[in-house]
Image (cartoon, rainbow, N blue to C red; front, side, top):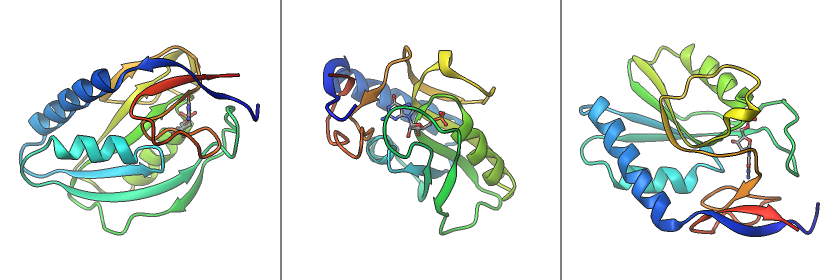
Length: 174
Ligand code: 5GP
């Protein structure tokens, strides 16, 4: 496990940039007036920063941090809230910005706790989705790419805190 490294490019920088621009346009079309993006740290930090730069008009941001993978490539199914939001969601059009939906456990947990805070609307944007891994039926309105069951890194996604800085998304191998 310890010598896993990016082995094969799955999504190029160009593919990602094009799709992120499309997602930004779709989200902005649905919420042209006011929009509050809640990014899930750390994995969504690059996705959020590219997404938001494609949006004109009013957008506010906030961040949460959760832990669902301690180390390695398998899910424990346990979700811990490491950092809560700084601002209220009351009456806002909220879109959760997440890097990847895998089993769906993390997003289900987040959606449940954020819905309880009375947003006007609550939707979710994920750059990547691995539908074959789903354990719970979670609703994701905006999906960048659907991928196979492979462990990926880059564009914010890590393996043991490495490779978040890659501009593309790669599959890890040894
Ligand atoms: P879920 O709760 O849906 O199983 O997992 C969501 C979280 O697991 C993501 O936010 C991400 O941190 C992590 N995760 C799931 N699949 C991958 C993957 O292929 N690569 C990386 N780096 N993280 C993943």
